[in-house]
Image (cartoon, rainbow, N blue to C red):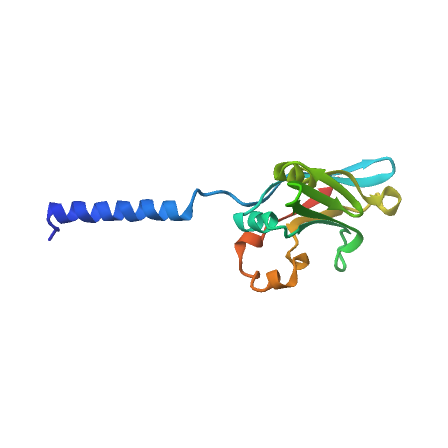
Length: 189
């Protein structure tokens, strides 16, 4: 038995209104996360260097925290391993780099820090673009590498929530808005 046409149209109309309301309440959908655009291990000048480029799209929650003056930290880490058949692979080198991104509300500028160096940017997009890539990042001296062995790099780039202020770290474990990261393994040729 089918419902009368009037009731069917009313239910379809209510379903449409509910669907449109849910779309409006959720706001426009936006991709978030970190995408690795390129990753290369380059030999030259007696060193093995790493070059990478990422596309970083911050979630609304992270952007809100930045707008309120809370600094966020991004960390890139690379481990160089030598393949071994008889035991676990040997870690030959480990490098890490940490960026501090903060909004300065009084000046309206974005500040990006790497080690002891700080750079000021006019927009958030410029600051994020600056932290999302690196070139000629020394991984190891070529003299450390055995020409007869095979090597690979485990690379990760992530938003480091452990460096947020302590009250903000409570309850972040299950929130996808703060879980921005990418990992990749690269064979060294």
